[in-house]
Structure formats: structure tokens, C-alpha cells
Length: 344
Image (cartoon, rainbow, N blue to C red; front, side, top):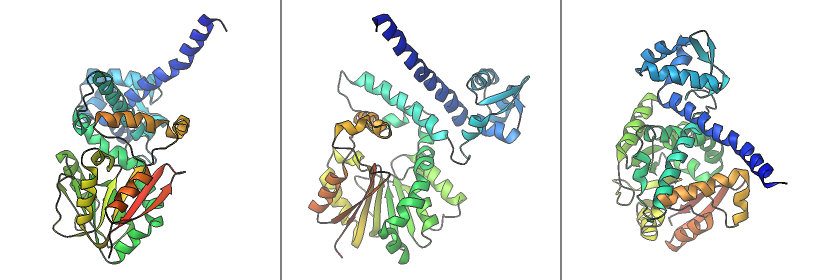
């Protein structure tokens, strides 16, 4: 094939990818500014009416409406707009909402830009990069909740026995790095007797978690507080200390010491319950479409001072600390739950 023809074919292949980024960018703007939600409530409205309902600048909203129409999120009748099928699916409260895809796409681009700028110096600025864009952090928890809450509540929780055991005795579950509290709310819905404490380093997350627990009628069983996972001390030994896709944030700086500290905060017979994506040992597996995002995430974790882990190395570290680990795999082996029990 002539080189010019091959180049043209490559450009043709990549053009939809470039438009896909624009597509999700338009969706993100509509999600974080409540535009999809407002239009869903109104049924149909002009751009000026949408701007008034959301407190946004009308000129920006008019141009967003044209762009959202161009990408099929909105339908139009003269100057009046209504949600199309994909626009309705972008509402955060929609069943099986597509909101996480828009939020993840913009977060990915932010992290890619940071990685590009840091490669020469080798600097790894840490988790604060998540808070560098004011619109991203408030949506980080809702993104995780929409992606993982139902999976945890309906698949993981009923198939990992330690949750039933702790529920039977009304035990305390501590969630380190709790975000907006989605994990404890899902657990509380499934297990009617457990009590929960969520700790997080971002005040925005703690406030959001507290508000959502109150709205769900769970404030009597769940509480949330600011806390440093490296230095936390509990008033009451925990039956479970959970970390959901967060242990890798502790691993490179004093990981072994952190695990010993975590074990010391468990009551006898208590367990650390760790949920992590299981990073493959075979690089060729990363070519699989379902696992490509792990390779990208591992790059962005490096920006934050972390790297993704393998279930076997997590289990070995807990065993070295005197706990007895058991590994459960879900989602065709992509997701690992490591239950590491302290001797009774």
C-alpha cells in the first residue's frame, strides 16, 4: 500500500477518536453544570431558560446547546431544546447513567496533560492533582459510585462471607479513603446491622459523604470524618477495615509499616478487606480491550506517586504481617478482593 494511502487510512481511523473526545467533553460540561438535569426536569426549554435555571451564563449555554445538538445529546424545535436518548442517559440520576464516562474522560485528559509535562523532570506531585481542576473533584466520588456501587452491593458483598459475619454481630466497618461514602452506603443497604466510619483526606468528600448518608436515612449508622490514612487511630477496634481501590496509594511510601498499623487497628478476628484491580503479570493481557485502561491508569497513578498492584503481592504482604489472606476474584479476574484476617 502506498505510504500516502496508508497515512490517509490512519487519519481516517483516528478522526472518530478525536471527535469522541469532543463528544465526551460536551457531555462533561452538561453533567457538571447541571444542564442535562435541568432540561430533564423542564422537558423542553430555550437556552436562555436553561441558563436561568442553572445559574449559568446564557451565551455559554447557547453555544453548549448547539454543540450538544450537533453530537446528538439534544433535539431541537426552533429555539426550544429537549433531551435526546443519550442526553437523558447522561443525567446523573438516570438508570445506568453514562455520567461516569464523561467524567472519566475529562479526568483522563487532565492526568495525561500532567504526565506529559512531568516526564522530563520525573516529578510526582501526588494526589492533589485530582483537586487541580475545580469541576473534577466533586464528581470523582459520584463517578466511582456509578461505576462500582451496584457491583459491590449485588455481586461482591453477597459472595464474600466476612460481610455477613460482621453484619450478624453489628460490627464496625471503617472505610479508609471513603470518597463520597458510596461503599458504606451500599454496605449499609445490604447489611442492616453494620456500623460504618469513613475517613478521607479531602474535606469536600467528607461533606458530600455526610450529606448523602443523611439523605439516605443512614446518619445513625454511618459517620464520616477527615483523616489521614497513614496516621489514623480508631477509638474502637474495627471488625473490618476496608480500602477500595486505594491501597496502592499507600504502597510506595511505607507500605509494610502501613499494613502493620492497619492490622493493629483490627479487633482479634477482624479483617482487612482490600479491593484492587489485579494488574496482570503478563503484559500481553493489557492488549485486551477490557484491560487497556489499566495500563493508562498505571501511568496516571505514577503522577500521584503510586502504581497498581497484583493480588498476590498484596496477599503476601498481609501474610508477612501475621494476617491470614484469602483472595476472591470477580469480573473475569480483573477485580480482586483480598480478605486478610487477624488471628482471633
